[in-house]
Picture 1 (cartoon, rainbow, N blue to C red):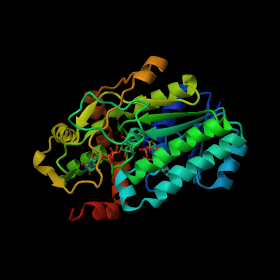
Picture 2 (picture 1 turned 90 degrees about the vertical axis):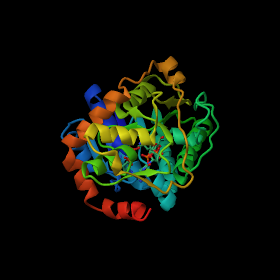
Picture 3 (picture 1 turned 30 degrees about the horizontal axis):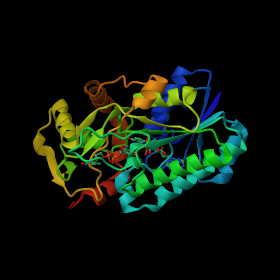
Length: 339
Ligand code: NAD
Ligand code: DAU
């Protein structure tokens, strides 16, 4: 079994590569990643020596290169994690989001058709459903919730999902799609809420909370997402969409307060800043379908997962300090200075 994993040098993709190499020592895992600002080869350093692992520095939009990797590897399965993933960056500069997230998906599916891939899996997001009101805690996203996007990022992911379903109906490509809620855990890039707050708190820097901090996200430990994708690859029904989420809704401000408490830092570090444009209020996934059909359940509760995550950032300072000392500084100044 050969699996091509795109975006495997990023946060979730690297956790998935590691999970699959450990669980299936006889599978060959081929990681394709362009190594954008968000991809880091050091994230995969413990995998690079494995005999059944190959890394290809390739852009998923580069048709010739992608077809050449498929020609060499003849993959059974393709799992597409590669994407521009940060909402704030998509508000600053949407174009690369459309290129990578939509056209890159098309290239991968064209190659999957050409080489008779048995399963093309698209890693999508709950953001394609838009948001839910705070005063309706009874509402959740199901797989039949209409697509209704807010940011250029979510619009690009939704566009890709539509294209994936079109390739299934028109060409019979054997596809599945998963739409997961917010992940957290090791190797999370420090531009995202949880790692940014951990890194800033450890340096006694201000903790920039957008708006009033009342927006709600449904947090899932990254390994639980990897387990869900594994189940979909091996038991999911072709042509289907699966929502993934752990019924763990939390307000941003409560997450930031918890991080302060765990690190023994004062809440006076919390600084309220100008809100994100078009900021989604609440995400909440109903995972009933994947639970009923594939027996998936989240295994790491937030109280444990956040401790594991904080411990990981304390034990792996080199990994994130290296990142925040480079180009990231310019990004941080642009996004947060005078905000
Ligand atoms: P990330 O930004 O940490 O990693 C993205 C990876 O894709 C990086 O390694 C980057 O180098 C690579 N990449 C970007 N453009 C590429 C290109 N053109 N060609 C090849 N590689 C390219 O992202 P993440 O948070 O790990 O998210 C992975 C996937 O999961 C994305 O598709 C995202 O939409 C989806 N998702 C993320 C979350 C979350 O909470 N982070 C939740 C649900 C779904
Ligand atoms: O729901 C899944 C999505 O989760 C994924 O599809 C995206 O790729 C991923 O980035 C994430 O999107 P969010 O926008 O929810 O995540 P982010 O970590 O950027 O922000 C989480 C919340 O925290 C959001 O309400 C904005 C807020 N926030 C974020 C940052 C970076 C702040 O208040 N301050 C910050 O500095």
